[in-house]
Amino acid sequence: DLTTFNICYSWPMPQPIKALLNSLDLSSFGWVSLREVVETTTFRSARDQKFESSKINHSQGIMVEVLFRGQFAYAATTDCTVSGIRAAAESARIQAEKAQQSKIHAFTMNERPSTQAQFRSIVAKPWKELGESDCIEKLIDITRKLKKSDAIVRTRAILQLVESRHHWISSSGADVEQHFAAGFAGLDGLVTEHAAVGLAARDEAADLLAGCRVDHAAHPEVGVYLALLRL
Image 1: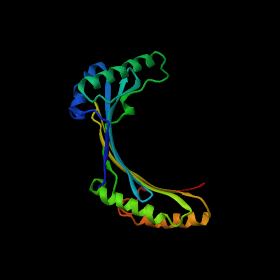
Image 2 (image 1 turned 30 degrees about the vertical axis):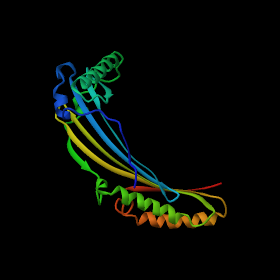
Image 3 (image 1 turned 30 degrees about the horizontal axis):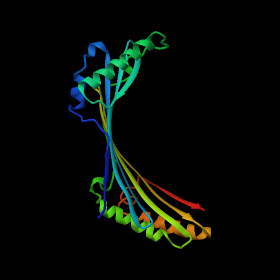
Image 4 (image 1 turned 60 degrees about the vertical axis):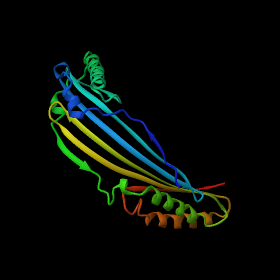
């Protein structure tokens, strides 16, 4: 049986981001935008033909941007509540007010048009559909085939997947959503003797990784890293 370790760092999102924006007294700020970021990172690895780790990290927060008296200023918070957003907005307003005292240029809302857009990374298969056991077994199999010789004293295969959602809205009507999917696959080994042994193992492992449906083939945006260290 595989053991899963879940590590979660987040504040609850009690209200939709638009409700949080509407909770602000806009007359006190001039122009305001909120950028919500929610990111989930999945990390799985195998080492020397054994399961090593499986972790899921979750984080979220909101960046507040204000345009006050011709100056932009920013603040960020993980307290995604009405009180948390109000405190961040007030912090940004104070910064803008101080910047106004030594301004070089006065900005207007023309720098922040009311953009409406959506973007989503194209993937062949959503990562949430990838079975954890199947993924770990594939990584274990890669470490097994990477060990081409006793000269290779350590083998390791990892897969890191990141899903990030960004939602930006403003008091002038901007509304932009972005969903990003990115990944990283890596192989490494320690070689004690002939370098050619390690290079052969690296080439075969690269072929294995390229044909692995849980990462590179299913997701061409996944980057691949191969490393060989000689003792």
